Amino acid sequence: MKKNGRVLPFQTKLAQAAEMLQEVAAHFSDAPVVAVADSWFGNNGLLKPMREAVGTRFHLLSRLRSNAALYTLPPPRDAKQRGRPRKYGQKLGSVAERAPELRDRAKTYTVHLYGKSREVHATDQVLMLRSLKCPVRVVWVFRETRYVALFTTDLGLSVEQIIEFYGARWKIESGFKELKQDIGSQSSQTRNSHAVTNHLQFCMMAATLTWVYADRLKPDPERRHKVKGRTSFAFPDVHRLIAEATLSEDFARVWPQLCIPPQKSFVATLLRRVA
Image (spheres, rainbow, N blue to C red):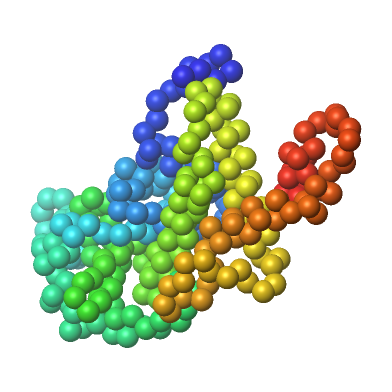
């Protein structure tokens, strides 16, 4: 593919992610950067290039695979010990093997998760991972019959912060669904790089306008598909209200009639609202 007459080099997802994170880290040059990612990005393929470019102020927080091998921290080196110091301590087994042993040690923590204050049962340990080659804090969050294992390279984060930060990642996943399915970013038929970028940016603008519109609504929109125990509305509920509003007679008043405007008046109106 060419852009402005130049052939674009191929980049993997990890390389693209590292490039974008380096731009964010450069903007916040004095602040620590914690990247919250799913298990696909939670490895040395992302951590190593970021540490080389940004340094130790970059940290990773992700979900740990159940078959990941865990090790204790390396023992302190003896003054008379020969050879290189050990990089890893005793092998403890996999994440899944450690979970039953640690369930009885779990404590109750109060965290703000998914818009509510919740109580979760969790325990943590500082261990070594071969996939990252550095110490990490591993947090096991236990449910009735299942568990979730999280880890972070930032040893200063508390158990509550690790759970809340990872829980906040779900809002990003919801945003992807809204962009792809509700707004239609995945339905683009363009092949030109500029057209693809423009299509995605207009989809993001549409999603932003939808939530700005929802924020100004009083009272909150009624949920179309009611779910027991849920009172909050969803993105399609706001989308439906906007569609009904655009079909009303008052909607035509936002741009002049009976004339040919010098530019697309509808697009100009959207851009003014976003600005």
